Image (cartoon, rainbow, N blue to C red):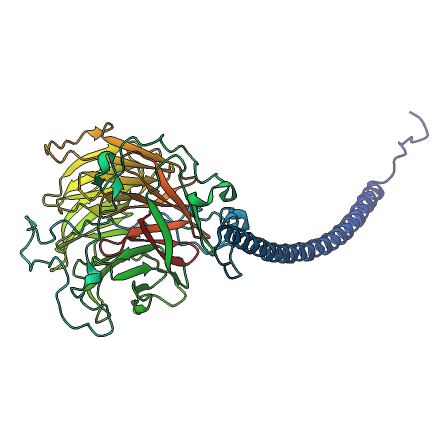
Length: 576
């Protein structure tokens, strides 16, 4: 054993821990310093970015101001050029020059030069299903929508026909009774010379005889975009008509039978969703946001404004999607987004009935010729037949096809004899029901997109439909043999009308059965020959989608258009 006690020399444990803590502290301080540096750099970058964003906003606003100024100057130059061109053409033709301020037709044909207009809310069970259908300008007013007017009626049909299968009620007169005018409302029509029935427009036939319809097979079918794509300046003067802010182009491939002119323009504070004439043609109604406006057709004076002040707040939207006069002109039905059908007494300016039962917006209404029933179409996938006298629902016409995802009813029309109801729906189909039994009679399938409007022809033997597939179709009804069936019909399509550049939003027919009228998102109205499928003329007279078209059942040959540009316009169409 050694005298020396040898022990290993090691540092104390406490001093080693202190050294490790100091190293950790140093690394933590370094990381803290780096984090502070990064934060400072981030704040500096955010400050610079905010400054650049502000500069870009200022630049963007200046660019918008310059664009508006440029558009205004461009419009002034175009108006002056158009005025000078018209004066030159009229001087060559030997006519006195027009006053200044006219707008060239070419300007109306380019959507990029039009001002944005507010659009009505969309159609369908959900609020986002059809956004942008009418909003061709891309404006930020919210998702738009539409409704189509009921079918036009034939005044030559007997109005007092007995309607079987409904409760007894006084028979509606075939014309307004003689009597004094009702205070503050549309007066009953008087038997005056000016209140004659609309006469069919004569057209030449071989042998010098007259006919009320166009000659079959005259010319080639109207191809897609035939008139819409034509430059108005290249059209001969005898094939176009120009107004101050509108123009009409006639089909060079078809014989010209008509002339068209602007009669009245009615401006409104909101989008015009629907338009309709009274049965005698004396009054005209336009449905807008929260209000229905009624005008005297002859004088263009506003007769009254119907508005339910008990509904909602002033800043809430409640678009009137459909309006329809009763045959005697004493009442008007309105359908709106609050699922209610209001029957107004026009002279008293108050609601007579409020029909409830629909579970979605009311998109379409139509009275029967005898005034006993009214039919409604709704986004709740049903059409309903109501008794006008009692205000009760007689039949619920349901769309029960299981293979259809969204069969909401967009448009309804009653046949001239009151026996049938036609309905267009979002599932691309047209259905026909019997009004007495509520039984479905026919299904017409052929459109490639939703059907937004239907109308009966004057003879009640066929139905016209307009669709988002940009076409119209004429369907033959199996009314002679009454051999209705529940199989979907793919063969009864008699005619396909092509030529619109965008969605067909509304269709109507003239009382003599000679013409089909359509309004489209392409801002145009077209008159069609139902026998040949050709366009007679294309009218450009609105700055936004033409949501609704209608024709006057009697009196002077008139039709009307309602648009997203807040305007309703009455036009005349007469033989040349």
